[in-house]
Image (cartoon, rainbow, N blue to C red; front, side):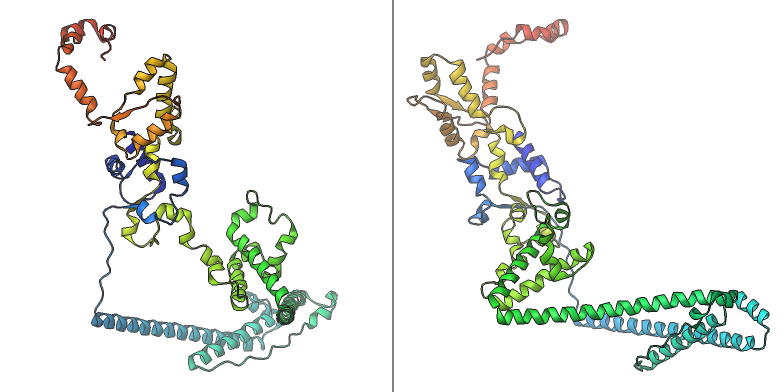
Length: 485
């Protein structure tokens, strides 16, 4: 009972998201059929998940499952599906073309409207023109001119796209900011607004120019670094190779640590405490944000490993981080899935339990209750205490040790007799004679003994009537009852 409960607890901890229901009766069957007592628990446990012989030690328990089978389609069905996809694509293209045409027509109407508005302003007074512009949410005539120019460019691009005409890059329009040189006192309110707008536009233009120049400088710097790297590889191959190996090891350590551990500094790991530790990463990746570094770390490692695979004869595919992260080298995978790959999409594999270290861990509780969280002595310690502390007389000890009788379901575990005999012997004198025998029917011995006693005359002497129980209560039983040996 306790063994099956313990195995059920271990299996639920091992497979917290197991899709089927595990019951205690199922675990009891597994305990009886597949668990055994280890002759040397610590030594066997240390090698239990080794690949050698693991196929025999790892037992797969298959629960019922329903595999999602996707029926194969005939060629006619595939052809009909392909035709439907083509038809859907044509309809989508037609809808997209219709939407583009509607947008184009709307832009042309807007362009015509704003051009009519621009022409109408030519015949209006300055005050009336300002009122009309404000009613249209326009700052001034320059703002209207920009809207007309943007609409003309957008309409031209749309037409060229529909006609399949490749657009040639238009020369960048030379932007001028004449109002920036005009003193504020010489401008009216509208002029001051336009001057502020031109100042903002000039700042944007200068910012784009600076970004473009920086990009060109960065490109030149990388090209120069690549040139110097090629020269170093050609002139000092051993030095270049040593540097690449160091870079690869550093990046592999960073990738293996994971982002959380890198940020907080892993246990017993002082990598990163010194700024020089990150020099290799910055040399390869350049200055980047934390998010960019996390995303690019794997790519940078791939680049360095690719170079080593190409130029280093001692560096093979087996040395790459991908090969070292293979499931065949994962102890957790072996513990959960045994010595076989795992397909998360397979319902059959998802409904499998792998019984390995539990086969010796569950019976071991009889000898070491502490591994199951039970604070008490094991079977051997209890037996030794009885012999050495309660039977002090050597003759009594000798008589007791000549016939150590074992019964109970736990004694049916394979190697139980040998394990008990070997460990119990360590608590006895060297010249002590020890004979251990097991009951013929350990499971039913207790019941048979009680049945034999109940069928004799002792039952009538030890029993009370219902009337006596109702009159004197349960306490009377405690006083009257005597031990039966």
